[in-house]
Length: 115
Image 1 (spheres, rainbow, N blue to C red):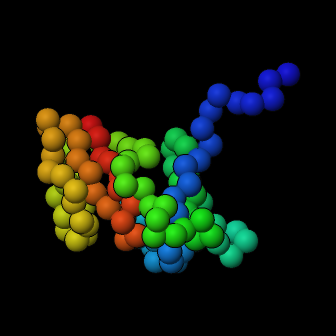
Image 2 (tube, rainbow, N blue to C red):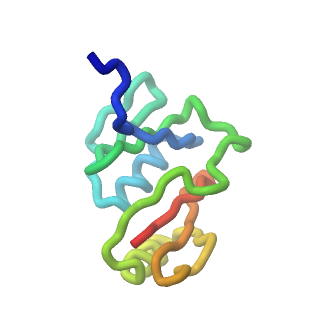
Image 3 (cartoon, rainbow, N blue to C red):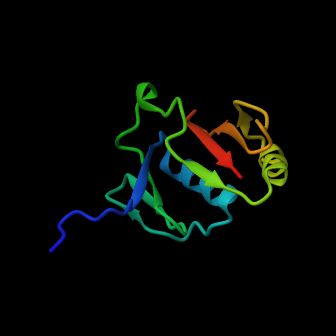
């Protein structure tokens, strides 16, 4: 019997305000905000791959992601850039090599979008 799976189940993101972050991530990912909040500090964003776990208990200004811990996928990098621009997202880079860019969430965690 295999005790440890070789599959990633989720990626934790430290957030200062769980509801604000839930709303922001759900908005940019087109997800419903109907999910349950666990233990007063965790919200799970159900994705097609590993889930994103927003956790306000692990947040401190010193532990936000300063480099991307994962990447979001898009089929059209230019369309994704314009979409996030309309959402007033703070960009860290422009579209690089026609394939990727970095941006920040409301807490300053650096995220990546990649084609």
